[in-house]
Length: 223
Image 1 (spheres, helix red, strand yellow):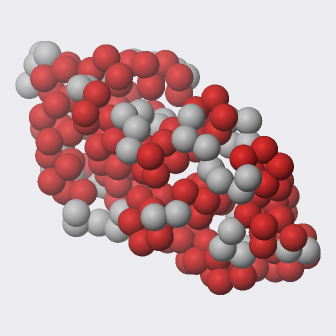
Image 2 (cartoon, rainbow, N blue to C red; image 1 turned 30 degrees about the horizontal axis):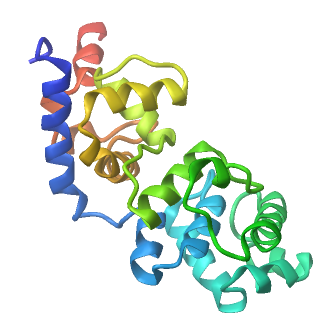
């Protein structure tokens, strides 16, 4: 099984994970986009999601949007009030400054609208490559792969790719998967990483793709 062509194995894995995807809570960016169809809310929630659980991020984001559901309201909100609203999320002081700056930047440069081009998105304060690609995939239906901790860790752990940097992972996965599947790669691996293939003590005993994964095999050989 471990000599299977990597691309063929990757496509089988993705097919299985796409089927499993509906069993779990959707990633926060997907969930908020489906509920609101609002790129601004997806952008803000994605910035807030860094180093935080999606369940907590979605709860805090939805509460924030009761007070500030557009760039103008968020930019005008006093920092102290904003920090109080998002206080239960990790790194809330820094994140509060980022999302206020992001909102003001949209007002100053894009008439309050979230741009639909990568080069414009990464100029927004608090937005890096990962966040920009999530917004493009979720809100503008662009074929892009967004690399977060899950999309980087899992393909490497499984033996599909061997990369060290997120940008290397992005390029490697683009070569393996058809372009039409790139958005599914984002969602499927994030969901799998949050629920089964966890960073520490992955739940291999209940993993639907365990027989295609190098991780357990390596552990058995070394034990």
